[in-house]
Image (cartoon, rainbow, N blue to C red; front, side):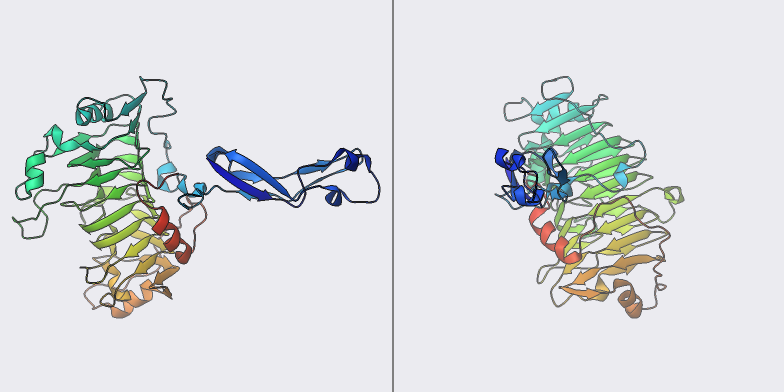
Length: 427
């Protein structure tokens, strides 16, 4: 429940005596108040408002006041920032499980502490061919499924818990009102379409890679994998902890994805978009929007891109003192990264030239970047410090993003993302 005060040029009230006076004073002067208070407004009440004051002789309309909603208890950003934007809106669009009502048990499913075998129930719902909205009110240990073919080898926790795999079907919305945790499991969207994942925490998917001594090429566990033409997917307000391989990977012709207001923490290879230099069938696909995310203690791939058009804007990158770090933006074969208004906070051992890494890349658009609070040109500095092993990058990535609302400055985004990104932060 929220309250917003809208100040207008004129008032919302005129007394009876004032209405009787049709001469000298102007209508603005006749107004008895300068403030309109809207009590108990809801998210749907956000928008533009004006006040009309009239009498028998004339009427006047106030200037328009824009109303945005902010939670007074958590000081979250305005609710408009939680709307879908970016590539996921293209094509057939995104509805997830559709407008199911909680009163419709055939379309709206609830998993809570009283649900028998919650992991099995969640798998059944997500793998169903039917459009479904699934509300997750409790943490779920997906290890109970015990259907991961690549068994844990080192980590005692994972050996004890086992691991689960869920093949998420099309037309699904999975959300938690509280930011519930999904542990010891992976979601695979294999050609799936029209999927929404919101307000979820992903944990418990890491072990030391003894077989390849830290290359992490054996198990291939990702929290969320979009593959084989998955499309129209929105991942919003999720938390991704340390995993064996990736957190969210978009590969093999997947397309039209938005990842927003999420946190990626304490991880090596965060996000791979395009898995091979030889996958020329990915041309024209792998279109991804990344906005208002926080990448903290992430060593690399935030993201690394091949072939795709990827809009990276208003993100916050944090490298703690003493943390391992290689790069953030990976420019690879035929990639088109359009990076705007991103903020980087790093210790002294990380330099601007470290932020971008190229493997056979040709172009990177960047603008509005802040590095420890000061503006920098990532492209110019990358080219100036290029060792010669890779060609210099140009600024022409061949496209210009349009599927976005207002893009905040990097300074504003840095503050908003710090307080608003991640699970449990949707009002």
